Image (cartoon, rainbow, N blue to C red; front, side, top):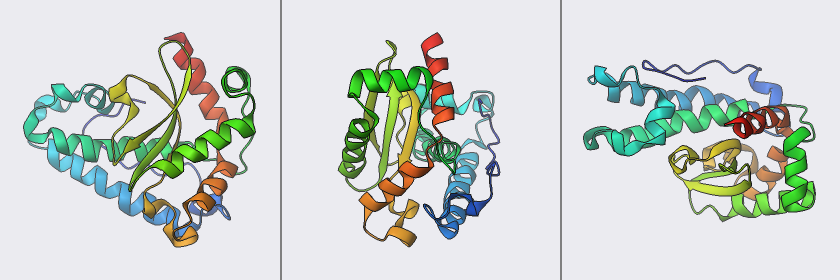
Length: 208
C-alpha cells in the first residue's frame, strides 16, 4: 500500500504478545510504538514545509532518492527508510509461522537446494551486518531470488529490487531478550516468518 504525507504509524494487525516466546512483548511494544513512531514523526517534520512532496508516495521517494532535494534527502533516507523498513518487518511476522509454498517455495528449492540450505545463507547474511541494518530476501527483474543486506535504514527500493522478507538486526530488535546473541534471535525470528505474505509479494513481482 502506497503511503503519503502525513505518514501514520499503523497499529499492528496482531497483539504485541503474539510473537511470544520468540520475540518478547516488551521488545515488540518498544520497537513499534517508540522506535517506529520516532521515524514517522521525524519524517512528517521533515516534509511539513515541502507541500510539493505531499503527493509523492514514500515508495517513490525511496526508489529514486536523487529526485529528493539535497537539503532533506538524508532525512528522507534515514527516517523514510525507517518507516518503510519497520512496517515491512512487522508485516512479515506471523505466529505460528508456516512453510513457504507456491512459486516462492519452488524458486527457493531451485536456487538454494532446500529450505535448510537457504536458512544457512540467510543466517550468514544476517550475522554479517556490521552494526545496524537488515537482511533481505528480494526478487530481481528476472524473478531470481537474492539475499542482500542493507546498512542503517537503506532499502532495496533504491536498488530496484522487490522485497519479500526482511529481518531487522538493529540491536533494539532483539537485545532485551537475546542480549548480544544475534544468532539466537535469527533462529527465533525464523519461527515466525509470514511465508504466506512473502509468496503473495513474489507472485506480484513475477507479474511486473
